View 1 (cartoon, rainbow, N blue to C red):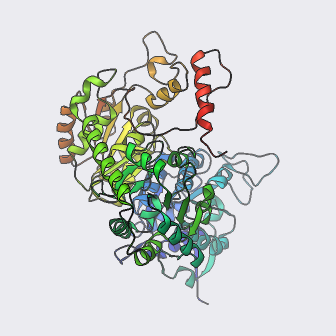
View 2: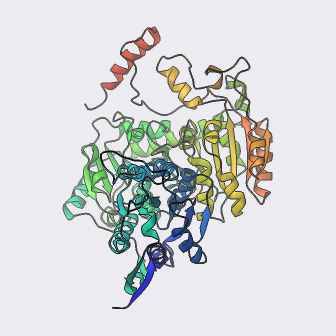
View 3: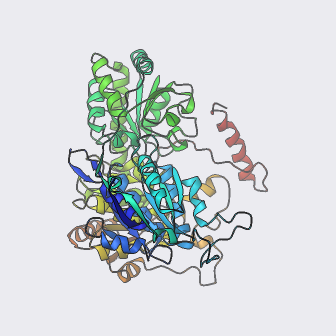
Length: 618
């Protein structure tokens, strides 16, 4: 057996370069699109040198914050429909801890990213090394153990030959349709520098293809029987439709059967908004038409969704309606007492297209769908219009008006990016997708600070598209440093900052549960007599190297969007918005109201809460 002597760090990099993937168009591409790195004493000497040697084959990008660089890597993988991914490396201690939030985000959203945080010395000779956490009851524990509950695979590399087993195991998780999620290799810093005689065959090129599984025959039979018996079925399309590349076959299926399709946050853009079977978003952030159809349906066909509480309205939306769930993950397919159909979405839909060639929904159901779409589209036009200004409490534009302006000045290929606050709800209801893979909203973990970094990740994945980030002032203040990275890399993004002076979404929720406004809007926070500072977001963005401006109206925003599109580097537009107005739609969400309170509003809403909970199955 031929062998090659390499440091463990060199071996890891060489192995990752050898991993390739067959993408949707049939071409072979690198599995890893690059590395995001912030170096420190735990990874700079060995892994840093190895990455420098390989920079022409595996590019390394310098982040400004470990959490945000990992967000960018995750967004890259999401925009690539999980076919390609990135590695993120940090030093030990705070650098590693900063990435734990991103690992949780990737875990919740079933997205692949390889974390390689540096770790303490395997030899323990210099212990306690700088930044080392000392657990008096277990000397094996370090900061990196925090990755264990938020990783789909975790290993601590304490000998160089362990890579021969651990790297393939990590790659399996990262490329597995059912188990996909973050993998963490905690790399002891002394081991990174140690040499070992690796088998040359370990570095042979490996081409990964999407593994597709057809459901068991009895499950397919149950699926067919349920659909054939239904007159008013509704499809709920999740992110799995995208990851399975099942968009085209789904559209054919519903065009033939006339089954309406509602979309989760991850599933949105599986249907273009003009499609006659597209009824928009579902659940807590759902459209009026989709939620009405969900309540009146006689069968829910869930495809590739986690069926989280925003989709099911905390298990109150569908009532006793049976659910059949097509999902590559048995864990997800069996939720909510569903009739589980464990298998690939595309293969399953192709099977249904063959077996249900003469099936159509009832005429009454077609009419409800058509009328519902007409009513919702009329409502969309009214709330996104510039003329709605007088309806807001503050006189500033609403989120809906901002989204309408961005859309009117847009292109069908634009990718809109968001994550937290009230904007994901308005986007889910109101953003009109003109083509697939144009809606990038992280709402599994709803992580404030994801937005701007994700814009960079989307641009790295799709440089030919405009990446448009819509972000509130709260999320902007939490994590904005990758604006500077986007400028440094020449990866232009457009960022629209909606300044409503605080955490307006949670302020609305606070008041909806009977509480006084407190500690959310800046005017309701503990501060000096002068009050909270008025942040000049435009000046801040300019200090990070971006082009920027502040606008005062919807008309000015539309004009500024034109300048942003013409700009050759990242462009930030800031506008003051109303913190109170939200659009109609949506559904009940289980947010517990205090059982005992000195406020009568809380006591009354507690009674309403208890009444609403009776609609839950248990």
